[in-house]
Structures are given as structure tokens and as C-alpha cells.
Length: 117
Image (cartoon, rainbow, N blue to C red; front, side, top):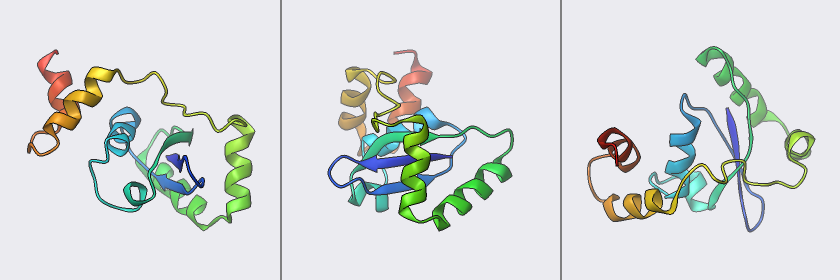
């Protein structure tokens, strides 16, 4: 389960995934249309790991019902500066590759890693 924030106004997006690095990368290169893309929510400000998908989904649903003050308190408990926790996960080459191939039916983040580039 993860929370992304936009740089401009701190809009929050809460999601769940089984691969945080790939999912955050998808948000950063704006691969999918939707809420996080519309509000430019690309900074990973909080995440939690779970042993099973049902627990993660349950936590996501609970957090989506929380008011903003509670969500901010949760984020600031572990990340008071609202730093992007994914900073350093990706190199410039990955972004360039993704941007060049966004129109391709191949998922650029998986294709690159599988091809050994």
C-alpha cells in the first residue's frame, strides 16, 4: 500500500500494488491515465508492506476513508519532510527509455529489465 503526493498542492493518491518500484515508475512517467496523472501525484511519501494482498487492500480502503489531517499525520510520522521515498530508485536511462517507448505496446519498465539493458 502506498501514498503519492503532488508537488504543487499536496494532493494525495492512495494505491496498492505487489511491485512498488514498477508501480511508482508507472506514475512517474504518467503511463496510466487517471487521478494521480491528472494531479501530478508522483512523489512516494509513504508505503507499507503486507504479507498478503487482502491485508494491503483492506488498509488501502481504510485509509481512503480517513480525513486529510489523519493522512498527513500518518505521512509525517515517518516522513516529516515529505521526501520522495523513491528517490534514487531509477536512473535517467530508465526515464528516457520509457518516454521513447510509451506508445509501444511493450511495457517499457519490464522490457528494459528483462532484456538486460
